[in-house]
Length: 466
Image (cartoon, rainbow, N blue to C red; front, top):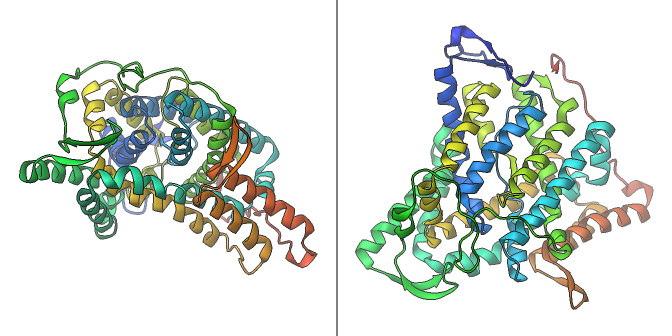
């Protein structure tokens, strides 16, 4: 059942060693508190990524709540999850803007990627996960995730960091220290706390040092300006929908997507990363809840694709399951989907507050510089994490040579020109090389180098089927 939860432990906090299952809940007061905690956990990344993708953060929060409700209904309440803004599309968005695209081009490419992700989920649901791992083994999946993250390094160096290098350096340092030094819940929201710190230090620098002369991403050139500018915040309403996009006035809000093949190809590699993210999320939830969720793996992936389509069709940000919320569940041992419905409702309320959107949009560029250094690097290293967890053998040239070529092509933004109107480059070309070259290499390799790349699902004792 997607709705209807059994109240356990008299609605009170579970005793030590006990847990609350997805189809159970505590009292509504405690459930609301847990839902709000989930919102805080995903808060920082969910509105940082829309900002650096050139999309509206107020709309992103609003649609993340709607997408989460869609996800929970599609998986029939069996996989507790919040769908926040996906980082996997950031590289594609940066590449689209580099080729003179606009926000409508970004959301059009995201929408198509969401459709493809949903279709992949349907395929996995009916054909099983073996098909997925045969086409996209861990060595390839890890390479694609890595190249998406590291391809963004020039964006940090040329767009965000130069806006205020000292604020960026301080923000980066504080995020690193908090992520490692803080324990429990606060360590998991280090990005959010880093944003608050960056805002405060930027305001302090304005008072002490005055205006800064540096690159201004809003103006698109070097200007003399205040680090913190709240003019739009003061004029924003407390209640209302996100604005409609107005290119002439440099306003990004809700809009209809536009579609161009070259831009769509830049976004499609993100599908591979999202499949990996969702697979890992479902596996993690299965371990925590002691349930076999493999039967709903395809449904969860398709639900994320559907959520991305729903969000992007009005100009919102792409969605994905969030590891931050996994951490909250692990700490509280409350896996109730009721808390996630509450979190979705809270996010929708934030999305109906223009003042909140204006506050987020006013985040100083130097703060984003410090945050993106950490976030982009983490995205890239997630690829290495996939390799490590699946014991990928790089002594085997079938694993080493093809993905090495794909990663360097992506990081170096190497391009392949077919005509004056069509060029493949960066993430798209690197992904094609990594996937196609791997399978070509494996086809011509001697039998002793053709490893079994599929992952065998082994039933674990005591695991409950859903």
